[in-house]
Image (tube, rainbow, N blue to C red; front, side, top):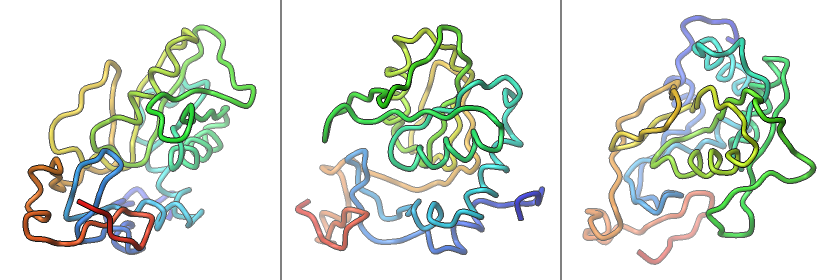
Length: 200
């Protein structure tokens, strides 16, 4: 599967049961009737290897990368595997503190000015995690070659200051909480990663 030129992320997500339906509270704070449970994929190492190989094959800047950077949590696994396949270093942007929007590099991670970096993440909805990662990189004077994600599920165009690539584009609606039709219908809201309903 790893070297299959016909590899389909959408088919892979269906195969592992990652495409789910219901009423979900996304990490962005928006609500949706569909959710991509990335860990259904990320706990399968061989599938992650295949997905990352497919992503690398589409990168126009793949031969220029010095470091692959990903935000916690899923971005760590993807950054590691993409870096492993490319034979370069990986780094991880962590939240400064629990619930904080700011990300930082810890555990001795530093970058030399001019280091050529690619940012990788799993699911793009609003682009918040990627922007936080770019902000964490700014003080180091690196060159960000581009951003790559597995799934772009944004409902409005997300614009970044560097090239952006998505392995798969999924048209999945999402709404601000105040405009959510599922809330108006009284459908229980679930926070992915838990089995509990949350207060809408």
